[in-house]
Length: 230
Ligand code: B1M
Image (cartoon, rainbow, N blue to C red):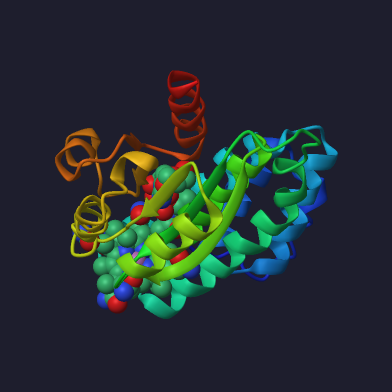
């Protein structure tokens, strides 16, 4: 999203909020991590909540990247740079999102399923869960059923969270849940699933306890499931 104003130096701190957010969308698109870090800090200094910066400036910008990636305007290297810029902004927000002094409300093991390396959404869910007082054990990306199952058993988790961003990897969630059933441990844990290509129907079809549209929904679902089980 470069244009004829490329040569002019833009002073982020001099832009009003709406223009700064637009500029951050452009900077995210261009993979400019330093500018994203700076813009994030400016919005926080202006009194924006971490949640608002995340949703409007970062996630909003990533949506544009996603559309142009789908349409073949952007390719993997550029999207990786955008993802790195997004992570730089998230690193600034993390301490604010996870600021909590309360005893863990519950424990979640989370990871992106086998064959899938997308981790931004998963990381966000982890941060929001921590921010809501849950303990989070993040297994990372490309996680197979054995690794998930070992981790929930070892950590005696309350929740298993699985993320998938590809239509080719989302069916693996059922493999994990079926393996939990085979081992007779399915009912010991609540399984939460999420990721852009999923929906409510898919969550039910694979036998998850909840499909989570976004990170905030994951927190709500975890709280509700805990309350329901006492
Ligand atoms: Co990829 N990619 N990608 N990619 N990528 C998508 C997913 C795609 C939709 C782009 C497109 O075509 N429009 C498309 C999938 C198409 C499909 O399956 N139908 C796609 C493709 C095709 C691919 C490759 C195959 C491309 C290639 O190599 N030719 C390849 C696959 C690699 C692999 O995994 N094996 C690939 C690679 C990559 C990069 C490495 C370049 C990079 C990932 C970097 C990283 O994550 N570290 C990347 C990115 C960045 C994207 C897009 C642009 C952005 C994803 C993202 O981070 N979104 C994405 C397009 C899109 O989704 N619009 C795309 C922001 C994030 C905050 O949202 O992850 O949805 P999201 O998470 C949300 C919710 O979904 C939910 O809460 C989160 C926060 O609100 N949620 C959960 C997510 N996980 C949850 C777990 C839970 C609960 C809620 O558990 C409890």
